[in-house]
Amino acid sequence: MLKPLGDRIIVTVDKQEEETVGGIVLASNAKEKPQTGTVVAIGAGRTTDDGKVIPVSVKEGQTVMFDKYAGSEVKYEGETYLVLHDKDLMAVVD
Image 1 (tube, rainbow, N blue to C red):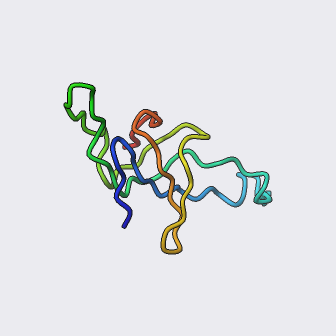
Image 2 (image 1 turned 120 degrees about the vertical axis):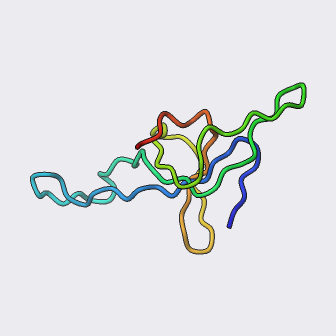
């Protein structure tokens, strides 16, 4: 598995619905980028100028919401992940 560095977080992005409530099937290019995902790995945290480490604010397994165009998409061993900074997260979904 990938091990993120610093305050980075690796997320598997939730799949978006293929149909609308009215039953209309959306073309893949008409879909918006999903904004929720599950945390699969976290870095140690951000290091301040005086050497203190501020831990990441989420834990592995949590479902999170993030900015629409945040992070970098990466492919690893046939899976697609999103690598985000801790500051790109908006909320934890309970």
